[in-house]
Length: 234
Image (cartoon, rainbow, N blue to C red; front, top):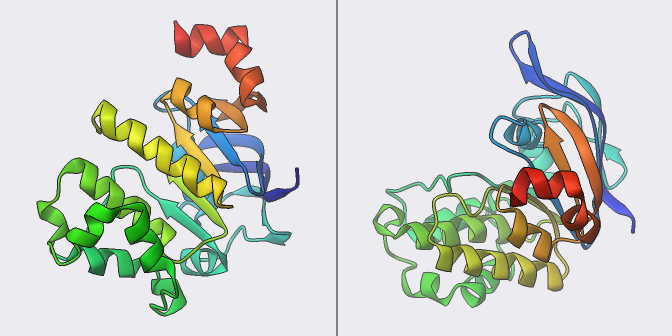
């Protein structure tokens, strides 16, 4: 399987402290690749490095062959990478549709078929398109967050902790949506702590611990790995 995004020797951090050290990861084109790790492992720092928010201090970030390390965030988004951030991060005083349209900002607001696709994925959002996002339930806000990432039809979706703070029912629904997006052709980099459900829908994955990749392989191999079992399955 070819990689749509490859990280090579990535080092990144804050102030004088490195959080990531020599991280190598390949995200398969047309696949769901997951990143597992406990709180403080460096997962969100890696997302920020990919998106240019906390630039890599060393290494290469290759997206479809182009080294995007050092690019500003708006250029990375415009190149075809969308991030669905941890914690949803709505604009509460904008409507549902206004929040969704912001997902196409890098395309000058041109939505093509993207908005119709989001409403097909989430009929509840179509019903609430004129409602203020801040009045939605947590699950509905998660739908808007996913939809905002999908609306511009990116070539890679980076999804950070989609199950955080959600009810078990909507966690299950969120993972089903991610599985459906992948089945329709989306490449997905899924960052999660919900190990069982993540490995169930992903093709391959990596384990990050203290800023380093400590295990990698197919999802089936990771699920059978004794160290992974002890760390995440008890």
